Amino acid sequence: MNGISIKGILWGLVLTFALDIVIGVALFGVHGGFTTINLPEPEQVKAIRSLTHSTSYLAYAMFFGLLTTTAGGYLAARFAGQRKYLNSAWIGVVGVILGLIIGGDLPLWFRVTAFIFTIPVALLGGYISKGAPLRPAKATGNEPKGIGGWLLLPAVGLIIMPFSLAYQFHQDILPALAPETWNTLTNTGSPAYHPLWGVAIVFEVVANVGLFCFTLWLLVLFFKKSKKIPKLVIIWLLATAVVQIFDLLLTRQIPLIASHPVSMDTVKNIGRSIVGIAIWVPYFLKSRRVKNTFVESASKQDSPSSSLRSINQP
Image 1 (cartoon, rainbow, N blue to C red):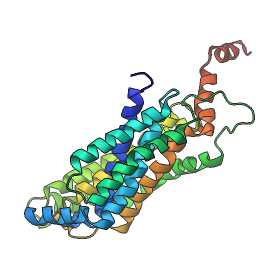
Image 2 (cartoon, rainbow, N blue to C red):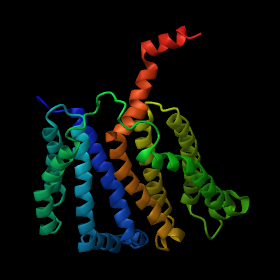
Image 3 (cartoon, rainbow, N blue to C red):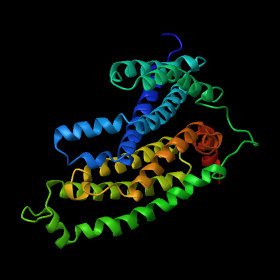
Image 4 (cartoon, one colour):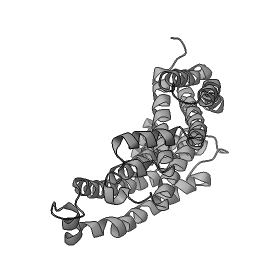
């Protein structure tokens, strides 16, 4: 169909659904959903239904759901040519269709609100994107460029992250790898044994080391002003949130952990990751400074004329 970017719509839907999943799990945990895991199945189903149909849960779900739809509409419009609103509208249309299919047992106020506002907020994403093409004009001398301004904040975050991961490994993971602790948690004869203890500890080791190495690599590319940075930073932000959410879900399957409420530190960390995604994904997609610092600078360095000049230099 003329004017429709299938790639843009698909990426917009992926972003919307990914954010919905992350936020949904966070809301579920904040509202005490993980405390239902150890209940007998009939009681568990009833408790989860009661939680997810509560006014508080649904109000937050509506608010954040509309925000994620706006983000999806924005991203879909970014891939479009002149017909940005058409592409962003499809994010809302898909949302309305899914709502009609799977939202039949939700309260009437929730369904009506979603039906009325889903397409408009998707169009709002298109409006925000309007005038910000994916490949902007080349930078002039007056435009922001270089690691400065708001770009300093993710730079500082990248510098701090390896130290934070190393501290977390030393404080939380390394003690679990001590022979006595490992045997207590993974030995079938131990009162504290659960088959998921070993899985959870190994996952945390692999995820921590993987994020540590990824962050160091990203840090090098960041200060080399690689053109890969915008995409890799977005992947890094999403990967961090996914690791935190999966680790929470995995460990809450262990009765010893599930018997206690989710710690505020865990909630804060996940909330910080969600806020980071909401702020920095649009920034790295739209910011002129990001384009001028990474994409345009890298293009100039890779250009044939730049290569010829370097060859001819004595």
